[in-house]
Image (tube, rainbow, N blue to C red):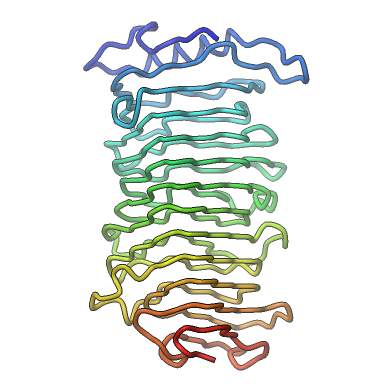
Length: 368
């Protein structure tokens, strides 16, 4: 497959390359060919990023029609970098690109109003993947998923071996940007594998609608505090009332660090399934803020399971409505600070005394 570079369209080191990138993406659009197996045309060129580029506005802009199969490659983290100085989203995918892959690139914002990707879909905007990529600098949000009432997809996004750095006023991945649209519950299937999520502040994943999320392995650290004094969270699901099949979070073999009292692993109002398996968030358990830290907080959960986890601080359950399918289970877990049920669990609300109870199985601290 032929390769094109921003330099082919006028990019010069030390100068703004916005127009060069726009011309390059326009060239990609002009060189599409028909897909032998369907109706969505495919890219015939691959983009190579071989240095550091500064841009001041969106470089991927809305184009009519759908397309698929675009690959962008760099030479390695920070060896190939796009620096965003403007306040717009770096990339705008307006119901167009599917099957996009980014490899070995970095993205950095010097403008706190900037965003990395705004993706609005009514059926396209799916199957994007990032491998060995990095984000740093201060952003309004990293990836924002949006769309009108008849929207769908914005799904199948995969992150492998990536580094999420920097700070986020909203979140690195923000789904359901317009939650009045019920169909945004269908933005689902987002996968993170062996990622280094070590950022300054904000939410890592925020879903104002439903979703289906899997996290497997990695180092997760919230290093600082939000400038507005608010709480930063790795997983934030702030609204209730979604379809049953899109309230799922699975987290396996992740090491978390909560370095201050304004950080949490999760705050959730989902009523689906949330599972933490073989995780630890106790690395900073020796610090003064840890014993009183509400590290995990739920409002009216459905099924919550911790399996073979080592846990810091306290877990809170705010139970104001009944749910006959509610199950909260701790299986073969240990705790750094609060090693009795009375000190570890904060349970309140009108349904706090309702069955089924919170269950402890094979508990290493002897909680029954």
